[in-house]
Image (cartoon, rainbow, N blue to C red; front, top):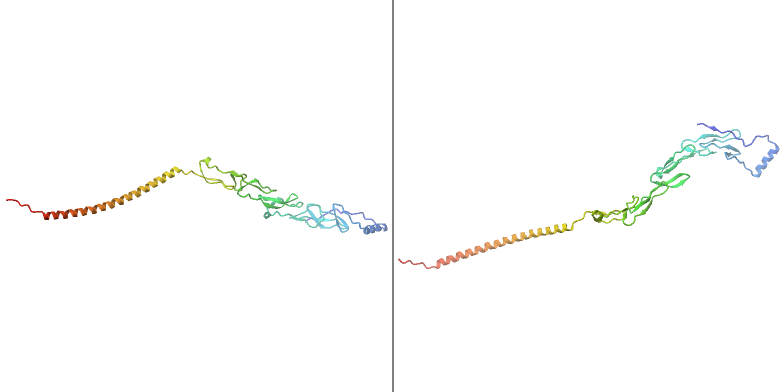
Amino acid sequence: MKTTTLPFKMTSTRKPVTAASLLILMIKVFSGNTLTCHPADYQMQDECCPMCPPGSRVKTDCTEFRSTSCLPCMDGSFMNKPTGLKQCFLCTNCDAGSGLKIKTSCTATSDTLCEPLEGFYCIDFTENHCVAAQKHSSCQPGQYIREKGTALRDTVCSDCSGGTFSDGTFPSCQPHTQCQSQNLQLIRAGTASTDAECGPHSSYGTVIGISVGLSLSIICIISSVVYFVWKKKTRLRGNRGNGSSQTEYLNQKENTAGSETPLMIAE
């Protein structure tokens, strides 16, 4: 790894120490004056050392005899400004579990920039960088999506008004189907979350005709059965009556034959 040595910067020109200069130095120390470095330098004890440039860090501090030496930032770290630090900053991790993805990758001189995943919005935004994100809200049945969620704001939902419906995924509420306009019969009325349910008309006259025809058929069948039973009983009674009459007729004939006087024929 290459080490960079910055040009040495003297805080002052070295001069022979005299009694006067020593006196002045003692006055400064006792008066409480401190060392003030240039904005491009950093203080290390009683020296003002040149800072390392962006993308690097301090390897060794400067001394009276040498300047600051620097090393470049390693992968996964960065330094975005001149520094007197001996460690670079770690690159930010865009965690998908927190709803984040990489917008701009980390470099030696800049940190990673994160942005929300699709379907998420940022809830903590710092210096053009999303630190935390949250999933967009889902609209409930009976609501429509009035404003779709973006990377910076959540979804906005609104309730459906009377005569309309939405399952929660519609960009606007839809009117209920008018069954009559389609020559259909309303089976189930629509709600704020469901459409009306329609079906074919049931013909009342046809139903009545079928019912009457079925009733007449049943009556005819019952009547036929009753008539058949009655006819059979009547026939049986008739047969019994005819048998008794014939028996009485034969008995009467025998009696009559026995009581008759024989006819005498004259010779």
